[in-house]
Image (cartoon, rainbow, N blue to C red; front, side, top):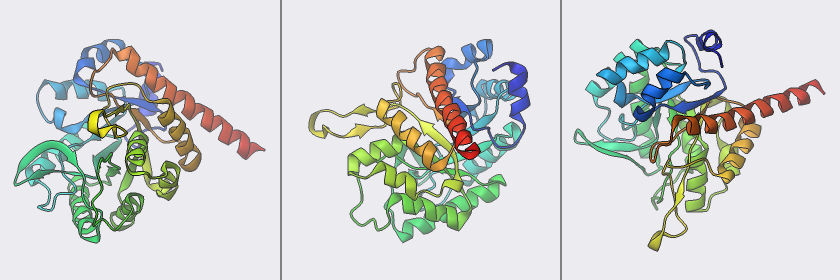
Length: 294
């Protein structure tokens, strides 16, 4: 995509339903030098709150739509949100004017100590109240709705009473938030827990989904054989591409992100994955147009 076309598509509102990449530190220089043909970029907000990385993000935002994807709000934390952290995120949001802002259905902090992980929570009415409270606080501080991402999980709490897809739908109904539909996370969790991934997709409120995520996963070994791990360290698996195509049929095209966070390859490898997502988005849009015209 030419620079002028990128600028024309950027605007200051929602990100277009095209394919983008998760921009990571090893790609900063190459990205600014080559200006690759991707529709948009997403960054982990906590890496850009200050310092030289913020200047890089501002340079990228000048010609690309940007989505801010947080990993540190701890929406599932019973103690509530860290107000200082939320204030810094609000400052970044004003400065960058992102098309989308998002977080995870998870917790990762306790007693003001961050655990550097996205931990699962029991899916109960009690935890629902906690997450809704925290989403409302975040949305008030940011002055906008946020997207909440479905997790990849390796265990289920025996006292959970609400199926995960229904829990997410209830968050939307009670807070007005949107959702990220992480297709790889659905595939991983469905494998680990014996869920039907297509039924999970069908249970999500399609109108609330603002973004798709795609990534690679790996198989655990040893005593955990049969378990899939959300490692983000390789290309998207063929079965996940297939599930993404199912998601397009059920939900429709949305901004679609390729994530690659470990064993990070050269930038052209990442943009080639993004091009694969773009081809599927384009094909679905063309096929849907043919159906409407018939």
